[in-house]
Image (cartoon, rainbow, N blue to C red; front, side):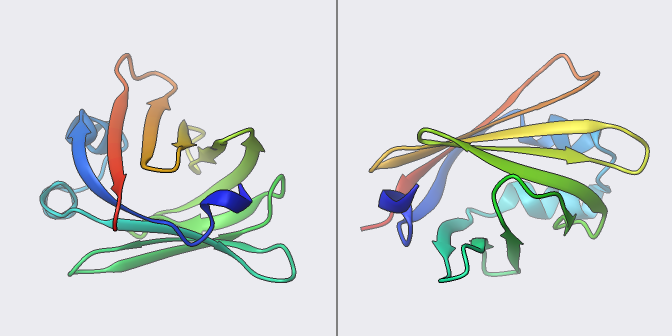
Length: 137
């Protein structure tokens, strides 16, 4: 993942994101705000091996700090706390989130030098969400 550290990617397209947010019970105001913005995402890592994934918009900045392969409590942008674990597999970061009710979502972030593709699935949801981010020059 080192070659993608510090690279900024901005959301260019989103497919099925609102349907996913509905499935995980995100309220209408938060849902409408989330689909109206184009976040900029950046992945960094400190000297202790702690990664930081930051998504910034004009409304809000969401920061997730994690170590690979270690479970942590994450506060989603809608304020819900979930158990998460992120593993690396080649150019992918695979995140599994489990809500208190047991519902599980998986976010696969596939990095290339110019594009970040995020594919989201959830147990019990028959669809998938694909969000495409392009490198900011």
